[in-house]
Amino acid sequence: MSEDDAEALEAGRLLFAGPITFERGVTSMNTLPPSDVPEVAFAGRSNVGKSSLINALTGRNKLARASTEPGRTRELNFFRVGDTLRIVDLPGYGYAKAPKTDIARWTALTNDYLRGRQALKRVVLLIDARHGAKPHDKDVMDALDKAAVNYQIVLTKCDKIKPTEVEETKTATDAILAKRPAAHPVVIATSAETSLGIDVLRAEIAALA
Image (cartoon, rainbow, N blue to C red; front, top):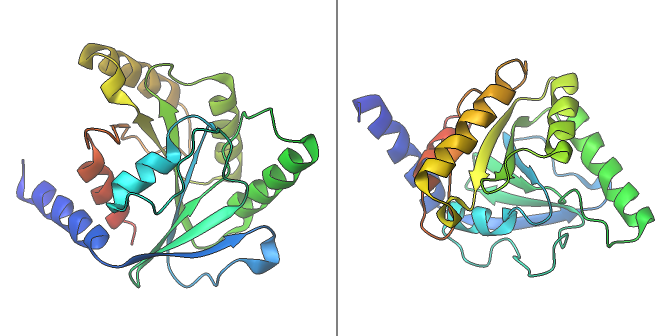
């Protein structure tokens, strides 16, 4: 590990070792918090393990409400990380059991936020390492490319498959991103259970603060 890498990892550790609090849940654009610090938004399919990863990232087991019921997040949840950053937990997509009017409402809210939020520095797009990028994920990538919103792919649940399979998914994901203009080139393999890649993700986010 180079000195620069070590410094980046330490910056990430320090950022998430400080105070982290739930700030507000937002159901309309006119109740967004002020754009006073950079924001990093987390997006992904309803069963991708988003809440578990946010809890692992922040070291707080109950910060984001993980549930056995997919699609629980139905608003934009803002978390304040010290005085320098916000994490935004976006509603999961691809969940069909909620009323269509509810799905349409929170999908429109998410799209408005992604297109129009000046403080948004990056979207962390979570993809289940066991399955790789699905059509819904590629649709989101298309929308982010079109809106010129920087995004980074993070593979979740990497403890559920063999390391060689993780590398295969990572290679396939790299190929998908190669021609996408808004994609960050570094794909991170993670596990909320074993903390694989959590330090690397912290360092990436700290660099945006």
